[in-house]
Length: 116
Picture 1 (cartoon, rainbow, N blue to C red):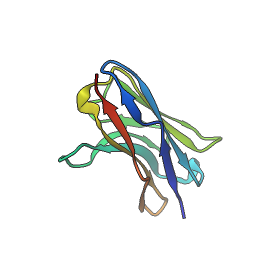
Picture 2: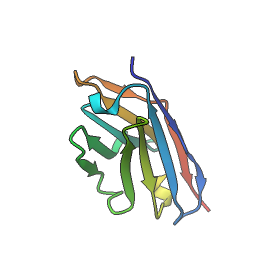
Picture 3: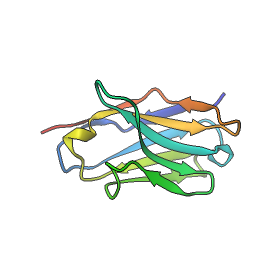
Picture 4: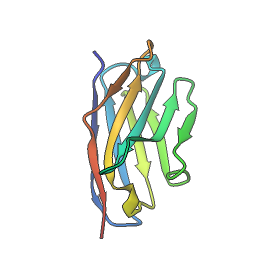
């Protein structure tokens, strides 16, 4: 059973930076994709960034040029570097993995609050 554990959330002022980590209990190489989603209060969960098994990366329109997804495949950790944060980035951020059979696995989430 693949498990995902996020860390790195917290309170950050507007314009600041934060890096989230997602520890994957299996090999990232075996996943179809790994990525980050977020859900703000009263809103639907939305894509933030995803890394495919071929190494390709995609980003949600609202975070392009500000957020960067990367992975340490040796340690099976997926990172989300978030720069120039805005109050509207406030949300619970979830790590996601697509298994070889396309089953989706989610982490428990980590809260990011952008506020002065």
